[in-house]
Image (spheres, rainbow, N blue to C red):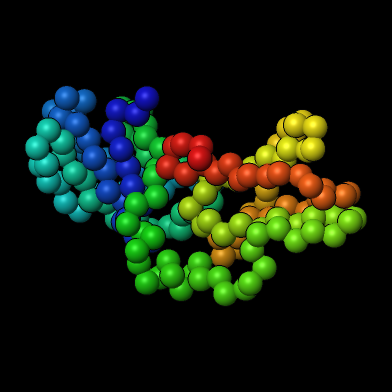
Length: 172
């Protein structure tokens, strides 16, 4: 379990909420690790929010929204980096706007395609249930602009399906 919480609030800003019960003194530094890289965070502001301290940090780098990253403090404490206010930025809208009308499923007797738009998911799985009730789970692939896809060969007529997404530390 995380000792603190971290949120990607903009393309260069991470907010970290640290309970005073975890660290009474100010934390001197944080870094982000993930996607085979390490990014140092520059603390811009520290605020007291009741029983917590809020650290507003700036960074120089690019964090991919479909990858898992962790924020580490100076003593090795960690927090999965959750998606925060970044989804309400104009730049997010510009990068992840998707205007195609091909989302959902597209069936033919020899193949079925599935497409889903969710830029903040770290992974998506497709659960298929055949007419006999047998379950099968397939990993979907990230394409771009927040679109995940899967192409299955074969006849999937009559199958039920649902998407399983991993967002902000939970499967949905």
